[in-house]
Each structure stands twice: as C-alpha cells, then as structure tokens.
Image (tube, rainbow, N blue to C red; front, side):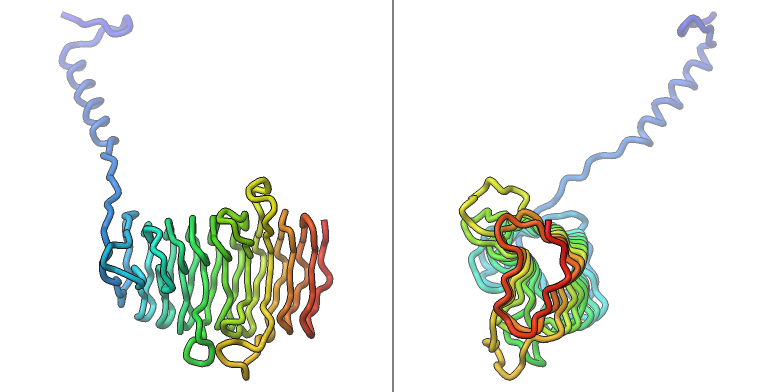
Length: 299
C-alpha cells in the first residue's frame, strides 16, 4: 500500500520518518523570544567586577534619589548590555559614574535622563564606547572639581548621542583623553541651544584630542530659532582652580553639519584644524588667545 505526495509514491514507514525529521528540525530551529526584564534600582549598584546586563532594563527607583544607578570603582571591569532608564529624575549626580582604573562602559543604552549621563570621574584609562544616549542633559562628561583629584584619562569613541538638553560631550577635568568617531545630534529638542562638544570652565582639560566626530543638526526644522554649536570653549580662569588653565587641546578632522555655529572659542590654546564645517550662519568665532583655527574646509 502506498501514499501519494506530489505524485511521488512513498511508503508509509518512510512517510512517518520524513515527518518526524521535519517536525524535529522545526523544534530545534525555533527558540522562544526572551522578554526584557525591568529591574528597579533603589540603591546604587557599585561594581567591582564586570557586569553584563543581558539587555535588561535598570530603572531609577523611587528611593534612589540623586545618586547614580551604576558606579564602577574596580580595575579592569566592564558594564555592558544594559538599558538604563533614569526615569526623568531631576538631579545633579550622573546616571552612571566610571572611576577606578581601566574600567569600561560598552553597548549600553541611556533613556529618559535629564541630568548627567555617563561621567568619568577620577578615572585612569577609562573607556566609554559603542553606547547609545537617547536623552540626557549632558550625554558624556568629566567631573567637576578639577585638579589632580578629579583628572580622568581614557577614550570616548563610537557613541551615538541625541536628544541632549545642553551638550553631547562635556569636556572637563580630562587629561590625555581621546574623543573620536562619535555621532552627535545637536538638534535643540528641549528649547535650549545645544553644543556638540563643549570644553567647560567648570574644570580645565589638558591634551585632549577630538577627532573624526560627526556633529550634525539632524532636524533643522525643530525650534529653528534656537542655535546649535559644533564646538564651544568657555573662557577662563577655571572655576575649580584658577591656577590651572586648559592647554594642548586639539579639534581636528571632524565634520560639523547644519549647525548655526561651527565653533565658538572663548577659551585659549585650542587648535582647530582640518575640519569640514558646513554651517547655517557662522563658521568659527574666535575670542580666545593663542588659538589656531586653520586650515579648515568650509562648505
């Protein structure tokens, strides 16, 4: 006795074997979709070893207050694969602080932050890379205070930063830091002028290299009366320590597109060269001393 399948005669035992193999293959090749878990954070998670969040969401809880959700304090540790929801908490402390030695923040996403986002404070050889900031007052920054107790050295690269209230990357108390290959959207989403990379007078910075970043106002129609700035530097003396001045900082090979100002330089000793600047109004306004602002390409 035979069964017909597409005009091909197959014995019943063979048919059963084929069906068993097919169904087994379907079961092996199917995997359940794992739902992301939300963890409420009511006390800062202090990391002294690497932590992979597995794509789960860690949300600012009602009892956390003005403290970070995570703080890295060890040596050679990494915070990775975490979705951080700061729950629009209004405060002065950052959502995440990296300190210690050779610690990293990688492949994390920051949402609903209206204070400092990722901050390097008293950090040696830190690394902040391949993260997404969807909302923050300052996406990535150094720490206030300045001087030897707050210096941070390391690398900030390949981050995607948008919907910032004031600034994409705030440079302060940075010493020997490289900031490269970041995408920063300076569209003024929150009715403020937005700066792509800002050297702050809160604390001096020394020998910072800013290179190959893409700073763009992606939505020129949103709040068109407000400005966006590719690079800005504050004037001195610094608030933290007037005896220490920013020096040796370089802004090179960056692309600034559709901003009102390519750069506003009120601070001193900055080299701005080999950048491509395509602005809506002003190219570079240089009010500082000993700044080098050429050659650059103006579109």
